[in-house]
Length: 512
Image (cartoon, rainbow, N blue to C red; front, side, top):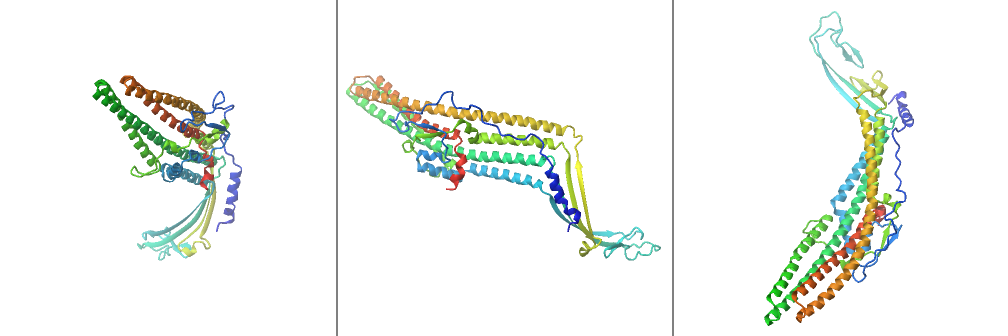
């Protein structure tokens, strides 16, 4: 057992810690930018032509909360199931979870320095003492005392060349404690906690990015399928026109140059099909990879007509962006960590205190180690003040302050980029809505022109060049409309991602 003086050690070290203070700057979380907004003027609604799927009007609902499962607004059960599968199987999620767990364990490890260290030591010794020595310099052990070795009791006798052996045991328990007087360890823990927070927000960003990529891949696949279908319709129309011209050529109502021009148009239309098919397969491969599968696995297919454009989209208040964006929160956590590291560097230049207590026993036989004469104890403290280390501590403190300035600038840059991202996405949503309306109108007009021109060409009223011009215009407007259709879905995804993706509601969803 510890002696009475050692029993006061915990109270002593607790008192030393309580009177200490954490040096260095105290962290204060940045405030949201004053008068922050997304645009100089109020944003109008994103309206488009309701004549086509995906052309519905979208309303921005200011201040509405964002659900974590925002993709359910597209009303596609297949898409919902695919995202759930991605969350379970995508390795980036597992990597982010492991990084967060690692950061948490580092916090626990550093917190261990707040407590005393206790260690036990047992040291058995076996010695051989030379017999070629005089009796006055030769010791032996008898019982629990130290006596002359047997046979050397007479100091007048000559030394005997007889070696002697003995065994010695020492057992001790040591307790060490370093009071955190100037808060070096508290600042270090504070820094590690902030880094853990950064990893947590990186995990949330992983979920948001993964969901956005899956939804974006599904919409890209649907768009490519629509473009392939439109291209097949164009090819079919070109084939019909070519058949009509060939019949007219046999009857003498068309020239060979007209047939050749239509054959070239058909070949060009067919040439646009393989690249679209290649992009479709690559998109399918991407979706399989996002859900943690190999290219030979099967996944559901997606089409634009099976996806519903959300009629109402939440629009967070500008002041909420710095709370909702994981990248902004991660940058703030890095700023907090850098702030704490300044305190670590300052504390390293101040005196370091330590207290150590040791208690134990030793004897030539284990039963005698803690009997009378065997036990021992010691208690001592230490104060170490760095005086000269070649300027290392000074420059480390200066470097930590520059790192703090760097983190502050990076945080400010992240905040500005976040607001820019939201504003760009909103403007893009409005612009693409108008583009879709214009593309629908252009497609309708081009379709009427093409149909009339084709009928006129069949009766020989217009030449082939006029028909090809009308056909080319229709093909271009058709593909542009399909791409604009998909762009509106993509803008909605980008807006949800720019607003933070509802990660703060993820725990509620996980509990369902």
